[in-house]
Image 1 (tube, rainbow, N blue to C red):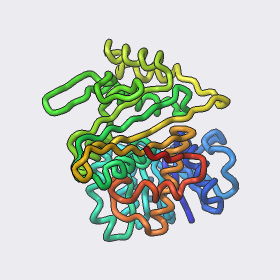
Image 2: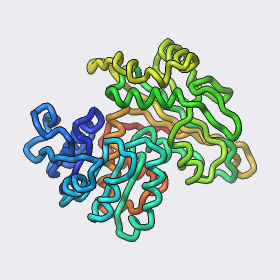
Image 3: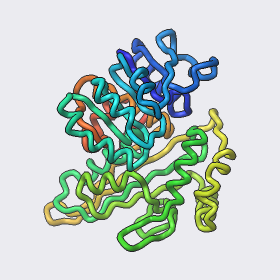
Length: 338
């Protein structure tokens, strides 16, 4: 099996390459990158069946050349338009994208009919948050007669190994205004439905989930494992230093490989069942943010390659939480029912 990891030299891309090798040790692994010179461009420990291939995601010709002959492409780079997904559909290749862009996810979703007819999978937002979070929502509301509200909670870790771009992405998310109809409030503020000090945010997955599952009241909440850090971020948002200075602040982050970077993600669905108020909670814990995201991406790729997932869209529209967790290596993510 030949697998291309587009953007495989970034922090998340390297984690995905390592996960591919752990799950599929015999696979031919192609690392797609604009950097084709120098050993530093090739992640270590991937064995003799790994090699770099030139890939410029802005150039359709370069994209098609890199994809040719692959059975699966995992996308770990930013795109304004889904050029990689379009090339995959034309060449008969499954694709899994870990990006968080809502516009790109909507464009991928528009390919659903073409992908399903071709027996292919084109999966967007295929990580932990977003990704498993959407699958958790589906499970948290399953069986309810009526749905009153859904809340998604994500406790991050200040020691997360997510690189500069990952840090910038999250700082931009937490600092975005929260828009509900005509109401607009500052992001990363406390709310009446918050839990354990987490704060409300405008998350890219929300629009996709509300439209895809027909939900009205869905809220996303986040925070870190440090109240002091939460307060500092909230202050920077309040004085509008974020997102403007997110790139500068990202340079200050440091990861200690000897210190844990565990994260927690849980979803609470409230509604009625048999005429009675009911609350259902589906909780996950992971040893790391990017480790879990890499595991999800590879698991979805395996399901696609086996023909168990077809169509285009976010994971919640194509498969189940238990189906994905069953394909992941033990120890990456643990499930807890509440």
